Image: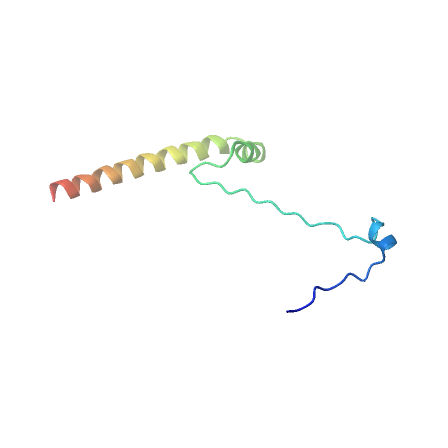
Amino acid sequence: MAKPKQSSLTSSQAESPEAVPPAVQAAAILRSGPLPDPKTLEYYERVCPGSAQEIVNMAKVEQKFRHRSAFLSLGAIVLG
C-alpha cells in the first residue's frame, strides 16, 4: 500500500495565510420547466423590455400544445 504524501510545508508556513492557496468553489443551479427562475426573467425584462411577457406567453402556448397533443394521443389509444 502506498504511503500518504507528506506536506513539504513547515508548521510556520502552514499557519501563514499566504502559503495556503485559496479554495476554489463552484455552484450550479439546475432548473426544469418552461420558465426561467424569477431573477433571470427579471434580468431579461431589464435587458429587453417586454421579453418577460413574451417568454410567459410562449410557455402558455407550448403548454396548450402539449395538453392538446396528449389529449389527442389518448383519444387515439382509446378509440384504437
